[in-house]
Image 1 (spheres, rainbow, N blue to C red):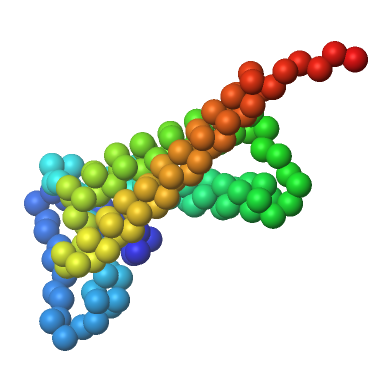
Image 2: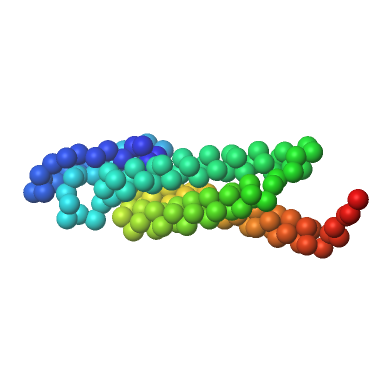
Length: 158
C-alpha cells in the first residue's frame, strides 16, 4: 500500500483532490492517493516515505533471519552464539524503535483519504514493530541464559 502513494510536484497554490466513490471496495479505495509537493502541507515527504519503506523492508528481512535462527536452534543442532544474539538484539531494537517512530509519523499525517486505509496500514506496521520487539526479548533471554550458563558452569581442568 505504501507504494501506491503518488507524489506530484506542483506549485504550492495548486491543490489536487481525489474523488472517492462510496460503493468502491476498501481494496480499491486504499490503492490510490495523491500527495502534492507542497512544503507547507502536513503530508509525508518523499524522503520520509522512502525511510518508511526501507525500514519496513529491513524489518521484514530481520524477521526472516530471526525465524531462520529460531528454527535452526530448536529443530537442529545449531547453537546461537552470544555475539550473534547480541547483534540481533541490537539490530532488532534499533529497527523496532525506528519503525515505531515512522509509524507514529505516518499515523499523524494519514496519507490515504479513507480512515480505514490509514488504520489498516498503521496497525499492520505496529504489529510488525511488536513482533520485532518480541524477537529482541527472545535474544535478550537467550543472551542472559548463555551468560548464566558460562558463569555457573565450573571450569574443567584436564
